[in-house]
Image 1: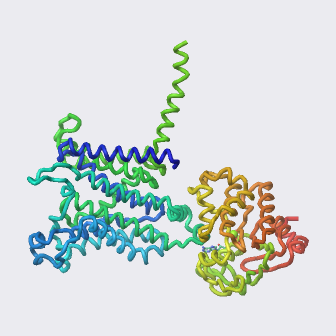
Image 2 (image 1 turned 180 degrees about the vertical axis):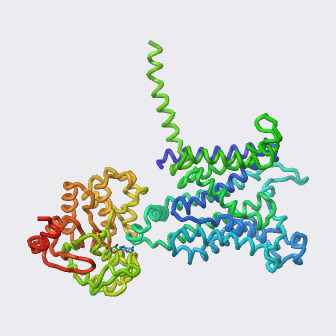
Image 3 (image 1 turned 135 degrees about the vertical axis):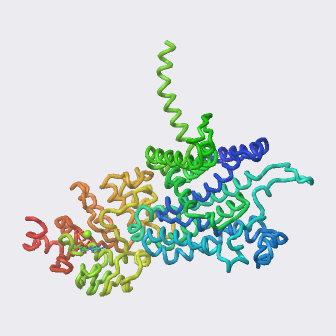
Length: 374
Length: 232
Ligand SMILES: Nc1ncnc2c1ncn2[C@@H]1O[C@H](COP(=O)(O)OP(=O)(O)OP(=O)(O)O)[C@@H](O)[C@H]1O
Ligand SMILES: [Mg+2]
């Protein structure tokens, strides 16, 4: 990236954040837009973390939901206010943990816990061929769901009961003495956290480690012949990816306001995989754009397909519960058919490329205009 | 410099290398020729630590490097230019070269200048993705990438594979050039004629065994070699 491109990117990002801030102050907080922005940002982070592993290192893992589960629980367990614990852990005498840590620290801890779990799985699985990683992580995520609902662990995990009453995104809003919100920050703050995380991942991808990751993806044997320590680099990529999936899990918990292990199904992993594929394997901006489009389509634009009225057409017999999924599947098939490599391929979104496209358009038009004035 | 004693390599139950011993003296070009499947690539792979031998000993500059991992062996100064080039297709030329220098932590400017001097084509194409280079350019890149590790011994597995005669000559010229700079070369080739002309010493392999050895010239004039490998 040239200096100019860097400046343009920074300005664009600042504009996005400014727009989020302004919208949050003027548009009612219940608007669907904020659901999409919040959930979209969280999924963008997890998709980028998955892309780091699948797209940039060539390792196929299906553990995202598992690492998010760990992140969500660690966040919840360490942030439920002590005075609330008796009511949350009502079947387990208020639980064993009787302290809380600050929200941001809990978010980091969520990532660390997921990273430690990844390091342990990676140790055997990454020494084998990469297909084993997919199987190992998928199995791990399934087992984890059972473990977190296990009664014996109830004093920590609350068993199969919900974890709730921990700080959520709404707690980022600034309120006055009467409890009225003065400044809305419940979308901006998660955007900032996700932005910092994705920035860190991009730094890693562009570092000498990132270069080695891509070399391993391109040709593992050749990388080994150059003296690359395959296992160490795969482990780093896997652990970092899982760290950010853990943070994504913590953010998802804050967004959903409750945590239940049974919600972290493998379907969640497949949704994220789909976002990565739609956005383009090996494109960070692709994963981000893909995530917002995916969430907007599934949570908002296609809602009417399930509830009777879509695009002004009322047809309760067709547009009923479940139809949305059918249409969504068709849309995804069309995208995959027409954009084999996803919306972005392995390229990044760049103003220069779009500007170039416009310039070419104008250049083609320019001679015609000259002809007209004669 | 490199001393191989009674090396045996098995793939599953099949013995691909059946007890081979040979030497590569410092500063020389040594070549290994032989029919397809004779086990030449297998030998290079086991020297570079990618394949583990079942028995025997590989010694480099007095250090036992048998069954050590690839990183250790590259660190010692032995680098392989793998068969079929195997450059990193999605990395740029420059990134490929940097991966070649992966084991080093010092400044690369001098080495980049050196390999760009040897292969000016690569300098022009520094920002091009490796996979979009022509076959000849990819081979140049594979050699240049190996040189970036500052090897004392560079092992090349069929560098002339699939290249036009003129390019092959270029590659051999550069090989001599590299050799003059003090890098020892172990060369595996199908192109026996060129290889024997370039080599100080040569070994002929057949199904896992060495059957003949001598200086390049001796083997060039050997009737058996002529009949089997030179097609004259
Ligand atoms: N990974 C492997 N698994 C099983 N058998 C192998 C493997 N690699 C090589 N072989 C076998 O070992 C023997 C020697 O192979 P090698 O690649 O060393 O031959 P080569 O002399 O380099 O041949 P060529 O000139 O065709 O490259 C062959 O019979 C081959 O089929
Ligand atoms: Mg071979």
